Image (cartoon, rainbow, N blue to C red; front, side, top):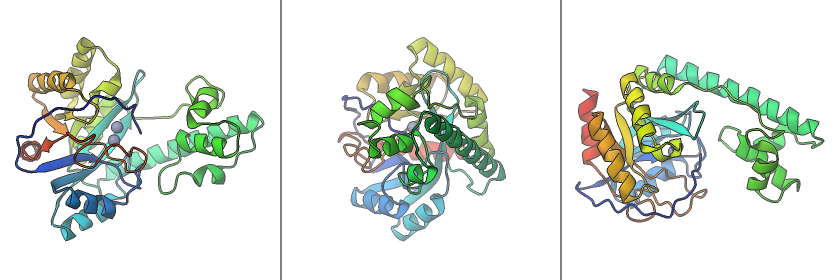
Length: 296
Ligand SMILES: [Zn+2]
Ligand SMILES: [Zn+2]
């Protein structure tokens, strides 16, 4: 999912010798680059290690790891799990996951089935409003990605029912609107446990999207840490120096590894460059060293 762009630039200064990027999306979720193209971009940007973290999917990981091997780049199998969170958005990153894990794949299949059922509900509601959209029309906007609300919005725009994706959400697709349908997700604890059971390390992605006050965030991080969370995403394009400092303090307090990455999507977020974010992000390779130590 795309997050609102903050205009702040991260002023984090490099301490490692080489740079890494532990948050990347490919065409197997909502990115515009194939796993192979991502690897080539990372090589051009002189990164030493990268993690593919598609939304609720590990289908691109095998291709990604092969491409990393060809380019002599360190590749980390990853995923970004969306969990149920009443307020803002909660995503949990998983690193070093075993993509053949039965539990992980059963969950991903369940999420897929839940998403398909939800899409049918949305379509029915929209059809009941007198809009004759078909699922094939909507799916055409998704490509290899899972069909989601954004693709309904794009179909509504193409049909001329609304002018922009935002208008489609405001009129039909947002929570509480006539075309909205709930979907089933894992609880935050369930998301962390699933990653751990797949042999991975779990890190809380872009904590600001939880939309919590500092004391509320601390309580939430404490609960996740008890569930087995090992990291918190500190270095991120939209994190200003103040947030970096706050999240570093949380990492220290709960013995979490400060992870980081650009949340690179390619064309959907053209201002975000791989490895660099808005230009000054610099995730040191020492982050990876710490993750590897925690794996042992
Ligand atoms: Zn995310
Ligand atoms: Zn992401």
